[in-house]
Length: 77
Image 1 (cartoon, rainbow, N blue to C red):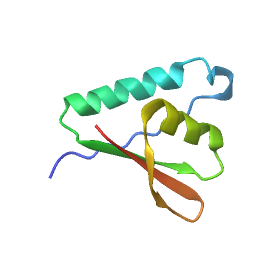
Image 2 (cartoon, one colour):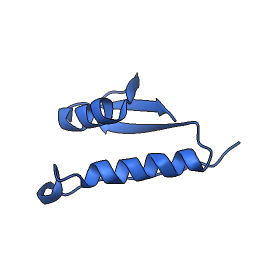
Image 3 (tube, rainbow, N blue to C red):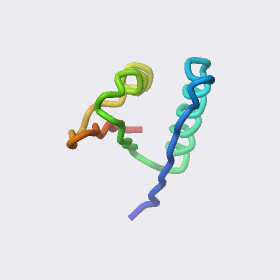
Image 4 (cartoon, one colour):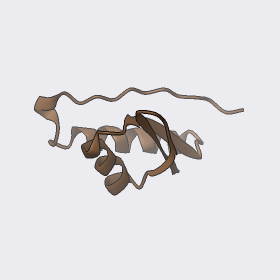
């Protein structure tokens, strides 16, 4: 069994839209891929359309499960 990583990301409002999230997620995905991970998943609140568009449109995540108030998004690396 491989390693499991947990990461919580939250860009404060004053810095949202400035590219910090893009840099952070790109670096994390690259590090995971280089370490041998074959995929990644995340959980986000269903009502957060901005985050949904960010992950799906910018990084190619897809919905892999729906919970009561959250979506589970995943991506193969």
